[in-house]
Amino acid sequence: MKLPLITFALLCLLVSCDAETRHDEAYEQNTEEEDVDIASEDFEVESISFECSEAVFDQQGTPTATLYALFDRERVEVAKVNNCNEVAQSDYPSYHIHPDAEAAIYSLHAGYGQYFYATIEDGKAMIYRVQRDETETGDFTYQAIAEYGAEGYSNHVE
Image 1 (spheres, one colour):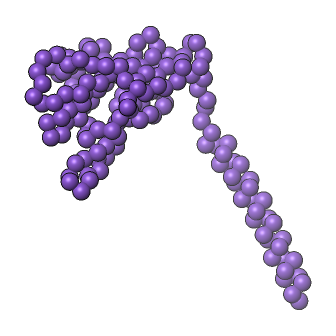
Image 2 (image 1 turned 120 degrees about the vertical axis):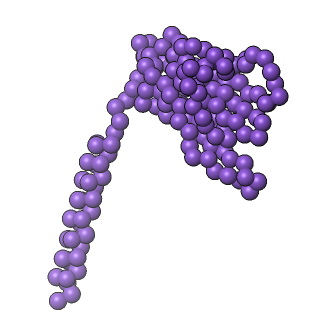
Image 3 (image 1 turned 30 degrees about the vertical axis):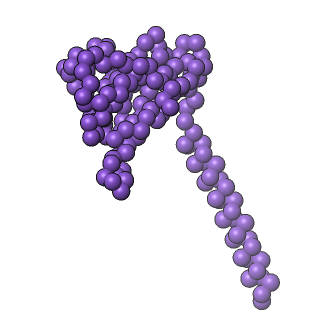
């Protein structure tokens, strides 16, 4: 009596394993993303925007969030910031942001600020940043900190 029961249990196990393998293969086929050949010479970034994670507070109450850049379908980390505030296009001159910027964000906490903007130049996305203390006056001198194009993503933030 035990032999038919054991044989039946093994047969059920084999059938369920095979069904699970077929399910996994179907899942992999359905979730594979279309490959984008960023190494091709005709690759050009079409859009760029910023996104910020929700801030997490340390024991002293200092917020930390992650600023991301979204290039077409790609999402990459740009920098750690305290918070993210969108800069309206009408305010670009006040922050010395290039008038052709696709997106701009600033992070301000306890008198220290970081200002970011992104442009598309020659088919590449460029991200610029300036760091300032609230006591500083004068022009904002932005530095290129990251780029995304045919060569991939390169971040120059320490």
